[in-house]
Amino acid sequence: MKNEHCIKLENMMHSAPFIQLTGLRASITEREAVMTLPVQEKLFHAAGAMHGALYFLALDNATFFAVNSIVEDVYVLTVDFNISLTKPIKSGIVTAKGKVIDQIKSLYIAEATLYDSENEVAGKGTGKFVRSKIKLTPELGYKL
Amino acid sequence: MTNNNVTTKYFPLSNPEKVESWGMSHFCESPVYHPKSIDEIKEILKFANDSKTRIVFRGGGCSYGDASIINGGIVVDMQSYNKILNFDESTGIIHAESGTTIKQIWEFAIEKGFWPPVVSGTMHPTLGGALSMNIHGKNNFAVGPLGEHVVEFSFLTGSGETIICSKEKNKELFYSFISGLGMLGCFLEIKLKLKKIYSGKMLVTPIPTKNLKEMFDEFVKHLPSSDYLVGWVDAFATGASLGRGLIHKANNLKEGEDPDFKENIKLKNQILPSTFFGVIPKSWMWMFMYPFSNKLGMRLVNWAKYIVGTLPFTQKVYKQGHAEFAFLLDYVPGWKKIYKPGSMIQYQVFFPENSAYTGMKEIFEHCHKKGMPSFLAVFKRHRKDNFLISHAVDGYSMAMDFPVSPKTRQKVWDMAYELDEIVLKHKGRFYFAKDSVMRPKVAEGFLSKEVVQKIKDLKKKYDPNNILQSDLYSRVFGNK
Image 1 (cartoon, rainbow over the protein chains, first blue to last red):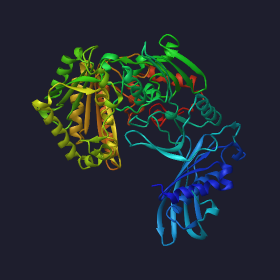
Image 2 (cartoon, chains in turn brown, green; image 1 turned 30 degrees about the vertical axis):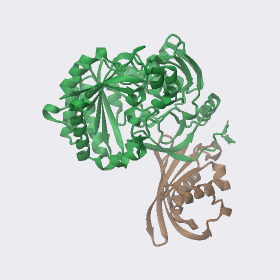
Image 3 (tube, one colour; image 1 turned 45 degrees about the horizontal axis):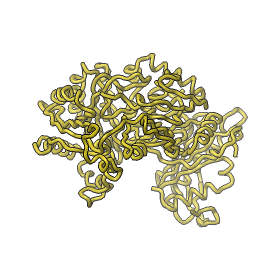
Image 4 (tube, rainbow over the protein chains, first blue to last red; image 1 turned 90 degrees about the vertical axis):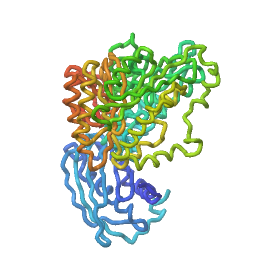
């Protein structure tokens, strides 16, 4: 379910300069997050497909915000991320769907799948996240 | 802002939203746009073509399955493009934007003495959506699908070309764009001929039938004298009662037959009541229905409905408002929630007259054999039409609701695949507005290889970048 915290997280993510550069957009609900990313030629690698950094961006944000949806006071941090890229992407939009799969004390584990515009799997990622000391405040863009 | 060489306000994307099918058993999480004008629609289309982004045009979202959702693309919700532009009372022709809903049209027209020629069981489809699926009503046997009542429309193809079509002008495209599943482009403005009515009420005759055979016999008997005819079937009944149910026959009053015409025709007397017994908000009703949303509960509900329908005092002819008779699916708002969390699919089959009885009997028997009788089944009479993608037959249809849960989903799909074989064996057809399960070989089986090829050829011509997609189209016709 989308609560006020999730909406503030979305606003925080969308306010980040790097996110604005890439056009990544989020929908965050409790324990889950969906990211959509337009495929842009200016972010291609030399061989003419979307750079792997963008795969990471979408997958990391999908898992990161799935976790932060259940951490309401502080920013979480990615401490480890494994990624596999399974298909090149050249056009349309990509969608990453992430969810929290486990929590061991203060360590959160989340996984995400990246789909291309034909809804075929183009990548997967699993990340580990911990609570940081950075408070979620309006200065970070965490506001309605 | 720019995306490659595209300059458009549609980049960056909007936030992804969860968009559900009518049956709530399919969804996508996609950016959603709400264009209000032709220019905005064209701009989205240009953005999609330039960036090779797949889009689906969505009307009221009233297709049961995945016809108006797209995973991996953008949803273009047409409901804000919804102005009624003109109405000519001398001809009954209404001119409206394609996002105008059936609700808007009947509420606009009824006090002027007009009613849409064809309506679905819910009033929420848009004109564009209704024509993309070429919807039919309870009068299909008499007046055909909605497309037959269209005078003219303008259509924006996937490549951005605007084409005007009527039964005389661009005739072949008229019969292809209507029924084209929104995969060749989108409707812009539509001129539709409404029908004249002389009362706000119709005469409704309830007719109970003991079994499927009697249902067919009564339909044959009453067809020539009916304006509307629909049968409800207790799909839980077996043996000698298999296919038992209730028919509702409705007839418009003729000019001068309604002394209260001026009062009955008023919108306030047509709008569906918002409460039951003047007390219970109808929006709460689904919660009372929830305990019955299982096999035992639905068996009881179906049994009780049939028994009540056979009581002599319920068999009297009565008068009912047009909206009340037409829009049964709107009677209990949110009724589909009783099927949560998996929600439901509808499986509607159309059989030619000569094989309809045998085919439907086999369908019901197979559902019983699998232990999955339909929770709600509706029987109708149809006639053939000339549209490219047509579900119509000179025969009968049965629409059956099946609940879906995460546990039973695969079982329901497997049973539907088995039912497909029965339908194809009897040369039956299917309806994409209801479909959730069709496979490519089944589409080829009922439409023919030639028609499927023609659909693909038209798509290549009018949507060369293949940007118009839906999950349904990808599933049935492929997305390459």
